[in-house]
Amino acid sequence: MLDYDRDGWIDLFVANDTQPNKLYRNQRNGTFEDVAVRAGVAFSEDGKARAGMGVDAADFDNSGVMGIAITNFDEEMMAVYKPGRGGTFTDAALPSGIGQPSRMRLGFGCAFLDVDLDGHLDMAAVNGHIDETVRNISGNHGYAQPPHLFLSDGQGKFRDLAAQAGGGFATPKVARGLAYGDFDRDGDLDLLITTNQGPAYLYRNDVTNGNRSMRLRLQGTKSNRDAIGAIVRLTTADGTQSRIVKTGSSYLSQSELTVTFGLGRREKAERIEVEWPSGLKQEFRNLAAGAWTCVEGRSPIA
Image (cartoon, rainbow, N blue to C red; front, side):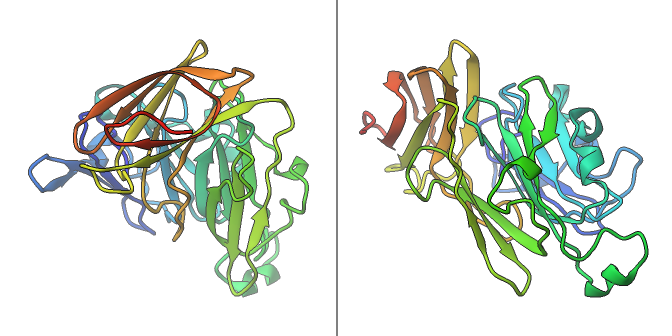
């Protein structure tokens, strides 16, 4: 789910295995039009359909427009579609630093999240081959493969710091699903990974750099109760971030519906705007860092 053209109507993106991807533009009358080719997200930069597995969409460059990440087969690398003008995208996987490290991995689940709460979305992606016998092929990178944890520098570049994450996070796995949520309620986002015919792994994230977070749980009244489709914008002196409350993404996965913003060292948000699916728009000023419940049409509750 995303609003790629910022018209206030939710659009749908579908990653397809060996077939062109689909971007269904909401025509506001109960129908959708596939504009993936026109938008530049149907194929790779060299015009080929890739084996899309997992997908996530988010405003990862704080431009106010949502971009798209897709995991693909090995030798294809991830796609990182950055929004441009006129509802078009360009694949920034290589210049962003995500493309080359992901080239030899077969990716599945992926998600944008602010791992270190610095106000810039990072990217986690899990990997694992589909054929056990691949380990017998000379030069292949294996059936079990390490995940990625790409941290953003806030300038459009990412570094894979999975090996420094600790806790066995970088251990090769035959991974499939990936979801995030604050299971220990300490304000940062933890990761859950599922594997093929294997255990699930829950990795607790402990942010120790002093950065704070703003977590908002939205509850619709006139809109749907889970506030699916609501868009939240948070502004500090560092700029504006945006999130959308969305259903399943990644690969066969559902992350928590609460939206999380990293504030860095700041103690509050200067302004928070919520666009509800009903069309109602609300604005809140000077909310302190922490967890808040926002009921449609009412003031936030700590």
